[in-house]
Length: 302
Image 1: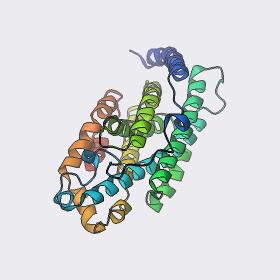
Image 2 (image 1 turned 90 degrees about the vertical axis):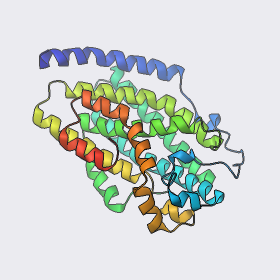
Image 3 (image 1 turned 135 degrees about the horizontal axis):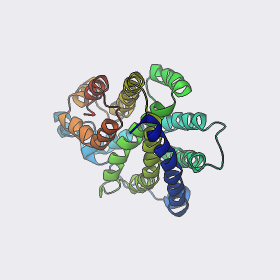
C-alpha cells in the first residue's frame, strides 16, 4: 500500500469513527454531580483503591502496617493518581485545542475533540471533589516535571500528543476497571471509576485513530523520534502517579517506603499487565522502537 493510499483510507475512516463516538457520547454519558452521592459518609474501613494496586502491597513493609495505615495509604494513593490525572488532563486539553485550531467545525473529528474536552473538564472536577471529600491534599509532580510539561504541551503535536494522551488513559483504565469492582473499595471511587472507564473508552478510540492517521506514510526518522518522545512522556506519567508524600501521610518512613515500592515485584508485574494492550497497539503503529522499548522497560511498562 502506498503512503498516498494509506492517507486516503485514514481520511475516509476518520469522520466515520468520530461520528460513531459522537453518537455514543450522546447516548451514554454521565454527570458526576448527580451520579455520585456526595453527601454519603465515607466508611472508615474501606480502601481508596484495591489493596493489590497499592505500591507497597506484597512487600514486608505492607505486612508490618496496621489496617488503619493501609486504608490511609490507599486513599492517599488514589488521590495522588487523581491529582496527576487532573494535571495531565489539563495538558491534554491544551494539546487537543491546538490540534483542532481553525479546523472545519462541521467535521465530526472537530466536534468530538470538543466533546472530549468537555468530558475531561467534568472528570477533573469529579477527581478534585473526591480528594476534597477524603480530606487529602493535592499531590503534584516534581517542580522540574511541571515546568518541563509546559514546553511539552506547547510543542507536542500529532502522534506525540495523542500518544502521550493514550498512555495516560490506558494505564488508568486498567486500574479503574479493577477499582470499580472492588468490594472493599470506597463507593465514591467505584462510581467515579465506572464513569471514567465508560467515557475514556471513547477517548482512547479517538486517540488511536488520530495516531493511525498521523502515522500514515511517515518517514523512519519521524517514527523513531515520535516513539522516543511518547516513551519519555509515558515514563514521566508513570513515575508521577504516586507522590512520595503518600507514605508520610500514612505514618511510614518515607525513605524506606520509597525503596520498598521501587523494588516491589508485585507492583512491577501489575504495571506490565496493565500496559500489555497499549504496547501491542504501539507496536502495530510502528511506535515501539528499540530505544522506546528500553525506556518502557525502565518503568516496568514492558
